Length: 183
Image (cartoon, rainbow, N blue to C red; front, side):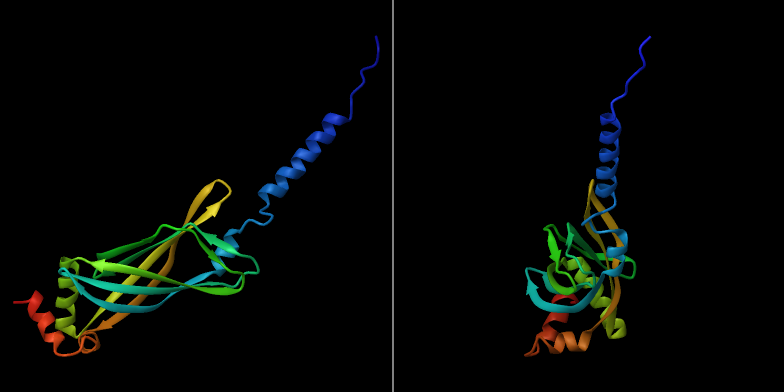
C-alpha cells in the first residue's frame, strides 16, 4: 500500500478564504454600530410657511452630526410630529444622504398638516398659548445585507408659541386665521 499524499493547497485555500471572510465581516470600511451611536440628529428649526387649501405648510430643519473620521450614508430619515400622543404629520426622506467625515449636514423637510391636525394644534395653543410638539424619528442605515433601522435617533420636544406664530403672519392675518378654523 502506498502512503497517502495530501496536497497543502486545499489547506492554504481554506486559510485564505477564512482570512478574506474575516476581513469582510470585520467591517473594513463599513460603518459599525459604534459609528452610528456617535452620530447625533438635532432639530434646529420648525418654521411656519403659510396656509394653502385648508392646510398648513411647515419646514423642519435637522442637523445630522457625524463626529467620525469616515463618511456615513443614510438610506432614509423618518420623522413623526406628535402632539399629546397623536400623530400630526409623518415625514420621510426617501433618498440617500451622505454625511461627511467630521461634518454637520443640514437636512430640510417640508410638511403639510391636514386641517384636522392643524385644528388640534390650534385648540391646544388657544388653551395654553403654546403647544408642545414631540419630534421623533428613525434612521435607516445601509448594512452589508440591506438596511437596518436605528430607532429614536431623533427625539426632541419643541414648543410652538401661538403669539409669535400669529405675529409672524402680519397684517391682522392671525385673527382671520383663528376665525377661519373656529367660527
